[in-house]
Length: 62
Image 1 (tube, rainbow, N blue to C red):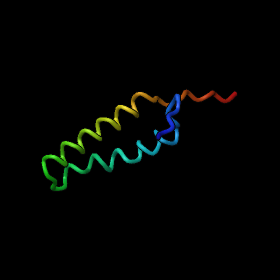
Image 2: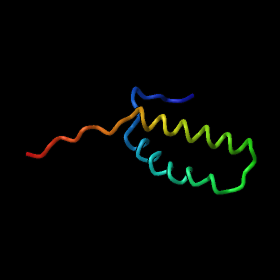
Image 3: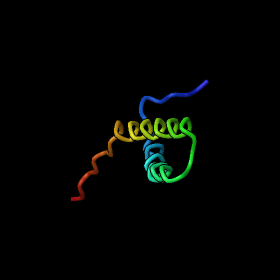
Image 4: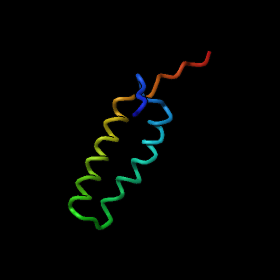
């Protein structure tokens, strides 16, 4: 059973942003077609999560 939140935590999105460049470098390693497809699918899903959770606007200092 999973516990789902109404919104994605900022910490989760930050972690995904850190993982994204590492996953993008997987193009340079040899892997089977099935694994390459699964990796590309995961990469697209991670990008979608990041894009659907934009950075909150920071309050200006006065």
